[in-house]
Amino acid sequence: MASVNHRPGLDPSVAEVRRAVRAALTGPSGGDAVIVALSGGPDSLALAAAVAFEAPKAGIAATAVVVDHGLQEGSDAVAAGAADAARSLGLDARVARVQVGAGAGPEAAAREARYAALAAAAREAGAGTVLLGHTLDDQAETVLLGLARGAGTASLAGMAPVRESDGIRWARPLLAVRRATTHAACEAQGLRPWSDPHNDERRYARVRVRHEVLPVLERELGPGVADALARTAEQLREDAEAFADMIDETIEDIVAHAEAGIAVSVAALAANPAALRHRIIRHVVASEFGVSLTRAQTLDVARLVTDWHGQGPIDLPACRATRTAAWITFTAA
Image (cartoon, rainbow, N blue to C red; front, side):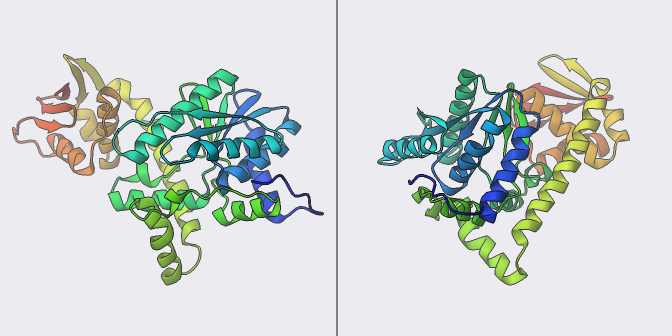
């Protein structure tokens, strides 16, 4: 990875990335320090370069954190190279080495370990915000993967530009920026990003979507598919947030504690439209038992409200749903 190549004028790709980062840094950041998640790839490297330029002007201390998962031979050298590139840009940088457990799969386990390491680095640095390098193309891929799984609007809403978790603000400044722009920004600044070989592994669903599915859609349906998918995610996220607010306003009045679980009023569920009724059911189960219901499971529970004729309990992940005259009771399995 090379240092910045200073050219006369400002390349449009560099300007676009900097504008996106400036907006993220001047918004409510939750502190005067940020962590930049840096893999060394073009997206995160373009992000790091923009943060290195914008953060000092905003009076914000920025540290690049490179997470070494140890899953590939030579990963330590890749991580060290990415950290050196960040330092050449003027950022503080550190490498966090993690152990990746088995988990639900290698991708999910690596992601869990990575986010835990970034959260730990943020707390250590007193940073209120972690900046992630996901782009509009990543968002489009996420929507397509959610669509293929039939995971509902929560998944189709994609990645949020900003989310709060355990006192940390996770921000994605480049979510409206195309991947081609980050590549161009790196080239314009003389930066040599690392190419992750996993990004060409067709055994990963996301890689197949990136290299096969989206190009076919762009070719057959015309350009702009990725932008349309990202706009769809934004609209669905607005709907999801509205539903979440409605649930928060009503949930206290329609639930009651039950032995080893929680109960929801049948009358209240019946009085709500199906979309809200289903979301309340999923919300209660997720909040109380930490599991997500599928569409089919949600509909099975809903039938205890809308089509009950004395049927028995329904077994669900981690819990069981039972209808009495006035309540749907969820108890631990």
